[in-house]
Length: 234
Image 1 (cartoon, rainbow, N blue to C red):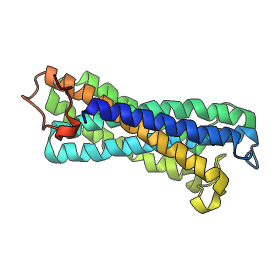
Image 2 (tube, one colour):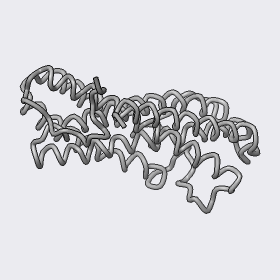
Image 3 (spheres, one colour):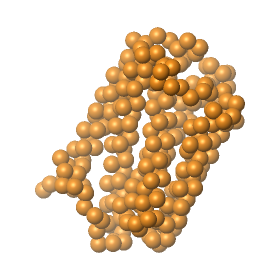
Image 4 (cartoon, helix red, strand yellow):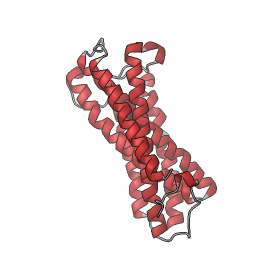
């Protein structure tokens, strides 16, 4: 199967799972005990945050691979991971105030999780700006890989901020602490968002690879497996 087909299949499956998860979350599950109907946004907000941090972690691992091997495949994967992470991070920053205002009566506060999330977005935005400003390929690859590793240090800080400092957010939830009737649609939504994020990543990698080859930085990149071949068959 060509990469284009994989992207479409993953995206379609992700959207289907999102529809099922969100449908059950909105209709079949009871209202959240403390937040009422507003709490239903968790079926969207929690998976979005998960994929944002996962995408940045993929970029972090790719940055290490880039520095270790100097191969463009890792560099382009790093760029793709950052851009997908940024898309979902912006969604987090939109969803958060929508959730906060009805429950806390404010759109924004300098809560530890909100503050560290804002720092995360600014840091990775800086990495993307560096990639546009540095034109020499090897220098750009090395500099932005280091910047990505430094920026990623804040990702676990965002996750654990509710445990380390006083926060308006609830403490980290465990699977055992979530009622089954709410857990199932949440996990389905999480799976759907993850598949959609994977489709975005593959699509973004394809664009990055095409641009890399067009710049003629190197004759070619290592080929993907035949079933993930980038170009459609004649």
